[in-house]
Image 1: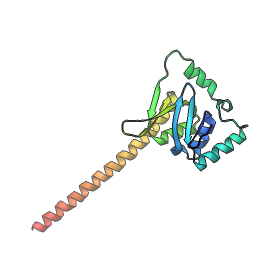
Image 2: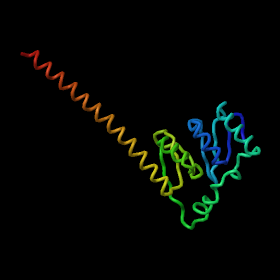
Image 3: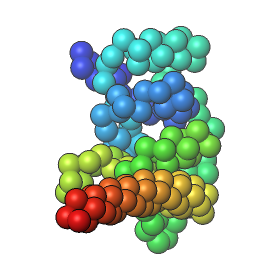
Image 4: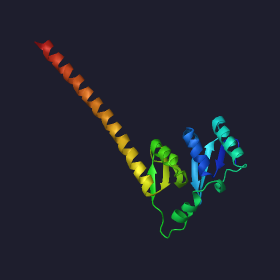
Length: 169
């Protein structure tokens, strides 16, 4: 389960608990074959949360303590067609997806061309809805920030030009 630097486990419930406790920053990777295996940095806080969780669940941190895998088997593993994926870098999207109980749908993590961590989820309607909602919020914040800074720059420039015109006279 753990080596000196990393803690690995398969429980989606434990993954949700760690994300809820603010430890998403300690997530190193997620790999699926076919079930996800979560790998976290072995920090004091992560080790403490995992230790308490394992003690409460008869020294287990595998899939047997979760009840979400039956639907996962039916919807993801036993389908004829390859399941679609949803990719995001937005940590608010990831936190919300996990907090709503879809942590088991995290397929893997990777690093994109801009050296940013990406999260790849198996697609379903609710995950797509969450992503769209959070992306709209982020886009609105971005637009507001950049619109106000552009307006500020234009106002500053206009003030400078007015000052200059007044000095010439």
